[in-house]
Image (cartoon, rainbow, N blue to C red):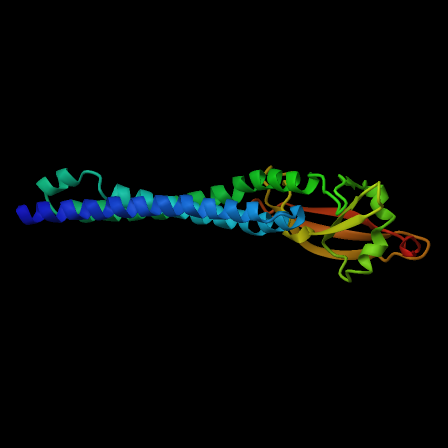
Length: 245
């Protein structure tokens, strides 16, 4: 009986220690990510970092919390198990591992479905934050119609025009321009069917090539990874004549 008591006492100590380590790791992962975000000074670079890494690091942190819960759950009713039979120890272990697997899939779905909404708000804020020119002046983001005037100048610098959005910032005092490129295929949008931010570009095709006298037409095919809903969006490609400097 004394041997069993020592075993459960040692077991609980290790489980509490494991839970503490996992909680600490989860917090450190979030702090590390936020520190990396803070250290990126350029808003465009910060946007790209958040877009590519925010959900991944958050999921790592969630997994660490799940493991912490697993360790802690393996200490529940230790005294009662000690006073009865060891088979309840194995029953508890089996139940806890089963609940851990369930928690993994439940939280994976929740993070995949709900967290992108928060990330999208953060990305929008980063994209719309006014830039500052080398002269120290606050820059203005051009409207879509104004961007058309610069569009071909941009696309001649970057050959692949598919899945690319451009923000053009201008310093009205000095004329300094900053052109920012955003990969649309990495960007999740709200699905009109299920309402989750799980809609991404699945395929693109140029429906009409731009000419010197007419605009072109780009057809973007979107697919929701949650409900499977599909949509098509048409994007106008500027006339070739508008690209002449």
